[in-house]
Length: 503
Image (cartoon, rainbow, N blue to C red; front, side, top):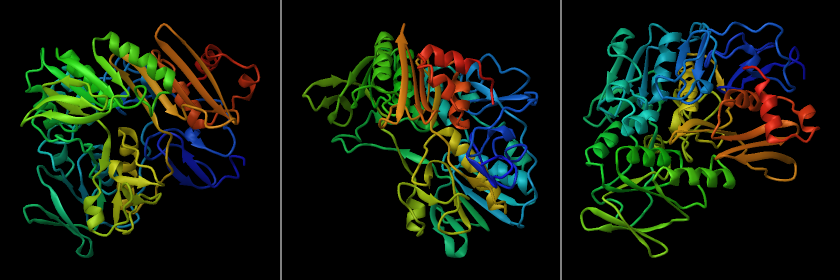
């Protein structure tokens, strides 16, 4: 289908769906230009590209103004190579409906993005943001950097002091919603107070999953999900202490690295055969494991916990193979589960998360959900970027817009223990219709997975300078037929991608 014939366009960056004979000039959610919208055939490069005025960090979505990206992201510390061009936000159309009051439950990035979208689209709408935590919204993805001592607590808030007052947002801190009274269009707080609403946006996030280990609730066993968690760990007199982290995913790795930076003797336990099994294939995970052990962290793979030992306080971890690892502090990082309890009790459709459609509406038309609590087409993303995009779309729709979320490829861009890593999409072939190109050397790994002449997934471990080009190629469904006909090496593929400019 040609560009002129298409009536539906999907933003490859944030998943926003636009209906019309042409894509919009700018995505109203993430600011991407019209070239980021997908058609059924590869899009031609525009003859003249708009000047780059700002850059977005692929890791934390911080936006930097200027013709060049910063050397280092001031929010998450990612290098300049992790920034992609970012267009100015499109002007929002006036809301279709007059909405008197919107209540947003949950003050993570999805909730904050929803608040910003509501206020932008509808200056007169009354907004209440309910936060269970006692501190204003902060960069949750920076908890491990704070734990490591890379940033201070003063650098954690997303918005400056006074922003909520200036934007006429009622922020209720330390306030927990105990019940959704959807028939009365009200939420009840734990203290008994009620907040009425015309539209409700649920962004209640997720909680750490604690496997049913015997002894899991002893003193000294914790998770890392909130600022209070981080401060409690920092109060544990870390230098010289034995610490164990269960879970070799992104959070477990970063937590282990942060504890080691604080002088703790750290053992990292991963039940799978290699680290980051969701982001890396076996060989890349093994290379990462070698690097991790080189930093002084003891790594145990295929390590399944049988019991947490100790009386009132943890003193060790008993593994299924019978070995015992002594510890004074145990951090469990074994994934998250959506906070869908309120929605489930209120009668909303719930699976893993609260089920939403493309408009991010729940089974009740006046209730929306976004972020870690929302399940869209069977997927709960559980990461910062999609949560922010979903929050913005839900906020727009709560005041009468008709913006759709079409889903986006999963990607990860971060620095793990000072080792650059980027992965996106399908990291291993599923069947014979896939083709992979790989190489390794000097502690680095490059892997590319193609299907039907399109790049559908990639791993850049140790050198992620071309993360932006790789992300663009996957999301824009660029045709690699000419390259693949030459049976390219990983170096050839990287050189080809390096010649492609940013979307």
